[in-house]
Amino acid sequence: MTTPQPTDAQAPPPYYERHIFFCLNERKNGEDSCVPRGAQAGFDRCKARVKAAGLAGPGRVRVNKAGCLDRCAGGPVAVVYPEAVWYTFVDDSDIDEIVESHLKNGQVVERLVLPPDVGR
Image 1 (cartoon, helix red, strand yellow):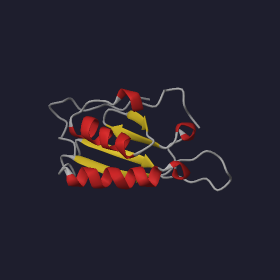
Image 2 (tube, rainbow, N blue to C red):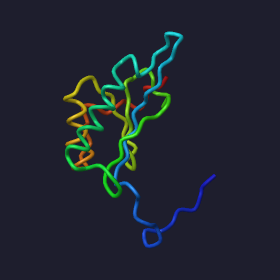
Image 3 (tube, helix red, strand yellow):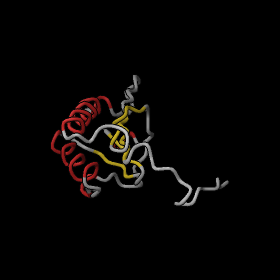
Image 4 (cartoon, rainbow, N blue to C red):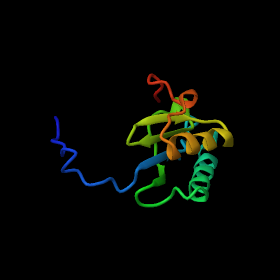
């Protein structure tokens, strides 16, 4: 099923230029999940860096929490829209690079891109 999309002339400007969602799911049964792997710290770091860089707000960047994004095996994970780029990260420097390169300058951080075959 395909939903008709407005043409560029009809489309309103996006409310946010980029939107990053961090999986903050935690499974209680011992299965893979993002929170035990540092997802909350990554979210907190990203939110603070985006705000400090003056990137936050309408027309700019939004940093959001999400429930399970179903890519648990690659966790922690985050996804940036509208490009639909999936990232995995391990430390503050990874988050800083995502903010500076992708959220600020529109350049995908290839070394952190989650392979497409990584799922739950």
